[in-house]
Image 1 (tube, helix red, strand yellow):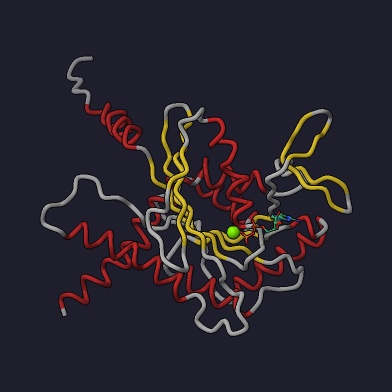
Image 2 (image 1 turned 180 degrees about the vertical axis):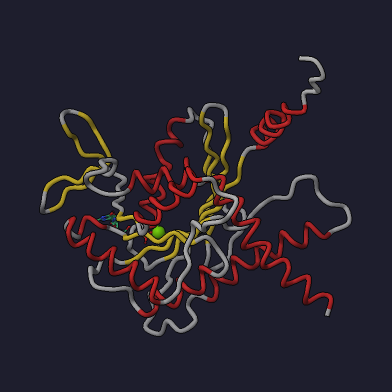
Length: 296
Ligand code: GDP
Ligand code: MG
């Protein structure tokens, strides 16, 4: 112990501080009405809300416009608090004329960056800036089994320039496993063809383990998901699921759909990285652009 200063405990100190403060995780869901956005969010997080033994609360939207609504949930697991803000974008792509329908969404994302920058720049910096920046955009693709719509491609392109985008094949129980695979390959080819760069991004800072993890995620994306707010009984046990013409789809069964992969990705393997990437890549790009404009 000779010469031991103890600064290595800084990681635990930082951790403690962060844990006390809690995390904030902001997700925006984008896609046509009826694709199961609300259902998916409830399927991912509802169990945690119940598990958190009355400490959970569903609060009023902390920021609301006529078009875009935010619902805030406080989740607690083993003493760790996560404030989850879900930004819903009803009506996107539902109109006959969808020209510029993505603009309110892009504007919303940029507005959060702008609000953060303003707070950062004020002389009396708040010690802790409330973070409303969007860390992840779940983009819902209709399970047509054919191809992406031209509108999807356009919007994916716009979104991926400002936010971490994670596309999902919505309601994938309406496709057979073979159809899903083919659709997924088709979507990947279209994304590549259109030069759309999606999260996760590779960087020199990642170690081999992280690169491998990202590679396996890139193979899975877009996750073919199924959501359900109802239970079905399997072998006497109630589980989240849906009945369809082929039988019962169990949401959490990895042989039935990729819901579990998406949930692990969002809440376990990439939560912190989604938050960091937002700050270091998307927010930083916004910030340097704004500061350059100020100088001119
Ligand atoms: P939103 O408008 O995108 O928020 O869609 P909702 O979550 O309100 O879901 C619309 C309808 O689709 C509801 O009747 C849901 O029960 C149903 N639904 C949601 N997810 C799925 C799914 O994965 N598969 C199927 N077959 N139906 C779903
Ligand atoms: Mg909804």
